[in-house]
Image (cartoon, rainbow, N blue to C red; front, side, top):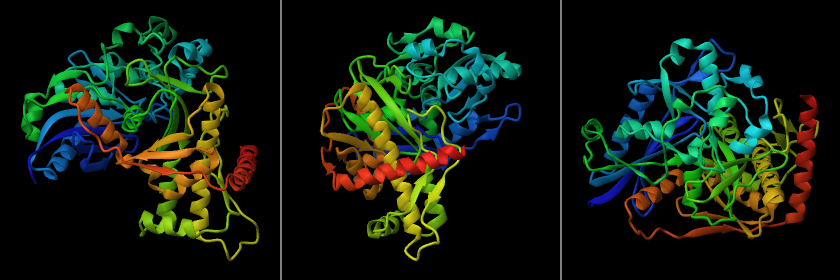
Length: 481
């Protein structure tokens, strides 16, 4: 392999750790991944944590593995992205105390302390729940005095990874948006929000913009990975924001980021809120831009689990072939996706089909119903965003591994009546977004691959009827809750 420049992008998702190597042109040169190891905290009904040192060793191990796939590449920069609400607590000497993922809800018992949730929504851009970082800190304070007494600061997981690489602790704006302690409109930490949770403002680290150079990698990282000591560590951002960046959208564009969950976002140039408090608004990693969001919740994970049940030994190509051949649409599903206009998420779900069991019912029928459930949830959330903020373009950008399904891409186009556009390497959107950030930080003007695929809407009347049937199915399961 000829010598080439490369970037390393660490991506800490909800389920796994991924490290990718990418070229400045956005070509993904290699990816390595492992599952994150979570532990239950018995002091709370619904609490998970991870050991920061264990996660850091995973990142280093995967970085070495991916570098072996590009032995002649010269690493110029490293950046990171991660699940957006997860944090790592730091002690007074900068030591990592504990890691709290987005799926940790240790603060749920103390949600009552938020006396004016509408005011918190106005400042933070999201209706406050135990999902967000401030409530994780409250949970530690209330029941883990051993940890709280040592805690002097905290970082998002991606900023903590960058801290491990560089020794410089900074909190990036899109990640700060997820804390409930950051005024999204003012683009700054908020003393008023800190007071709402009785948290000291001294916990809050300095803020840095995505694309800012923190410095060179530490000597230990350089030696451990065998990369140049001059490799720069670049501030990244939230995983949704990096994925969005990979599509190179403009203000007023919509983007679907299809992964374990599926955020649907509109990019706005002003701080936009929903009067009914159904949406999230975050800072984007692009200056002066906001991410106005609804989230379809657990979607890709449902698809993955159905594959494990019905297609344990076959690839996704086999599923796609059977889905394309499925002409019987009588099986409907509702499997726990989220809708922005529902105050309470579904806790029961399943499949509905005519009885007795038809000979036409196949394993493909169940997976097709699952894909339709995902697509309908995306379409519903899209409609809510468009209702609040409008959407004039005749297309929606799509990215993320979930959109590898041709059937899903077509269903989204059919149900929204919009073209679905995908960039080259859309499946590896976080890695491509990371490469773009590194180019920006290093002030490199690089020609990216501008190849796009466009999926056009088809048979909209038929899918309008299917959407109505899906809504009936969802209401059926809602009435069971």
